[in-house]
Image (cartoon, rainbow over all chains, first blue to last red; front, side, top):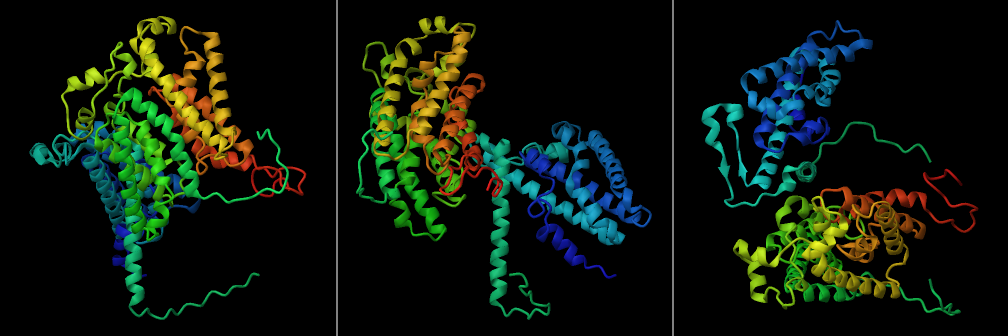
Amino acid sequence: MSVDYRKITLNGLWHNNPALVQLLGLCPLLAVTSSVVNALGLGLASTLVLSSSNLTVSLFRRLVPETVRLPIFVMIIASFVTAIELLMQAFTYELYLILGIFIPLIVTNCVIMGRADAFAAKNPVSASVLDGLMMGVGFTSVLVVLGAIREVLGTGAIFSNMHLLFGENARDWMIVLAEHYEGFLFAILPPGAFVGLGLLIALKNIIDARAEAKRSIAPAPQSSGSKRVRVTG
Amino acid sequence: MALIRLSSPHVYKANSTANVMRLVLIATLPGILAMTFFFGWGTLIQIALACTLALAFEAAVLKLRKRPPGFFLSDGSALVTAILLAVAIPPFSAWWVTATGIFFAIVIAKHLYGGLGNNPFNPAMVAYALLLVSFPVEMTRWTSPMTQHGGGWEIAGFIDTLQVIFGSVDAGFYDSFTGATPLDVLKHRGGLTTEELWRQSDVLTNGVGAWYAVSAAWFMGGIFLLSRKIFTWHTPLSMLVALFLTASAFYGFDPDNYVNPVVHLSVGATMLGAFFIATDPVTSATSNKGKMVFGALLGVLIYVIRTWGNYPDAVAFAVLLMNLCAPFIDQYTQPRTYGHNRANRGMKGKNQ
């Protein structure tokens, strides 16, 4: 069975993006994207869990009985989440405190369970790891973009508190875009996340529609599949 | 409630959206005049600013959506939204508060949902709730009514008001021209009973009259619309009755801690809400029975959110919550159609 790595990459990053298309993992997506650093922190943690759980699930896919596969996947995911949680507690303690409950809640992130069951359990190791990684990167990038939008609109600055993730010399990465900004609380509060995500999804649909229109102008290859025939009255 | 029954033949004339909106605009005049009289030029400036911005945003979005701007701009719905938002926000709000509100009302709450007729939420109230949540300081800085400046006819001048809205003034200006509204005072009462509060607070002894007058003006506008059959009596009446009954029940039990029901009816945005916001044909329930349910639940919600919520007034939040319920109410209050024994209720085909 040949593996189409390019397709897996594009699927994870764009065509089947977990946040914009599958709309999975919305709970952390909406809850922690109030700033770039929170979004990036949770995104990286999710990506790590996603690729390592995909790796493990794929390794054991022939040993796991069909009937009890979900509990076993949950156990695998939970172990990785615990490891990540302990790592964050050790190295990025302040961020660990800020993200709080959302780190353990990575276990329940549907993206991870979904990829384990839908992809890793049926595909070879290399493809599964790549899938996990790309899904994770796709998820993280949406988190970061949403975080950036909300941080800029809400506080008038961007990249604040980056030292929580990158150490002391990242403390002055903050860029103030508007002095004397009054603050737009709506963007920081949960409704801002919903509106922001909605606009991002709309943007993706527009880009897809434009690309589709461009492609249909170019001579389309004749489809070889059978035509659908209307059989019911 | 047509008291005079006219016999046939009836002349029938279809009403256009533009005509309805024009009548609504006319009906807002008494309210606007009263607000200008008591709170100064701010209201008029906000209305001018809001209308200009609303037309500009509407035109821009219509162009983006490839709709004919002339046709939709002339129906006046953007103006009605703009005026309702402009009278709801404090008269001294900075221009960017109004601009943000109008942008959200027209672009997000109206056109992203498909334009006039497709918006599930009242655009002006979406914008108001957004502003209240986002800019709590600006949105709670209400102008003190002129009656409060003990005997004097003191109200901020036109130039000063322009300065407040478009420029900046020192904090002392706000101290002398803005203050708590009656609902603010009644909410943040400390340990005082309602009666003590009523005796001590300057806002309640002197200022509340202005609010009564403004409410009366909105009421007049509402009655005008009712007489022109722009909406039926069901929504406003059931809302006011529900608010009155709920308030009476609590006031009857414990007059020290709860507010007189008559005050509930005549301060804040009650009258504006009952006649101009709850009656929005797009976002409220459709059938007469549905309108009664809609109005009654709205009245109860206004009381609940006013009394136990975090913000002093509640009309915007209550209206938005009820907008959400309107389709559900519609489904269960369909009138009986001719040829059927019973009204069709709930999911399609259940009771046929």
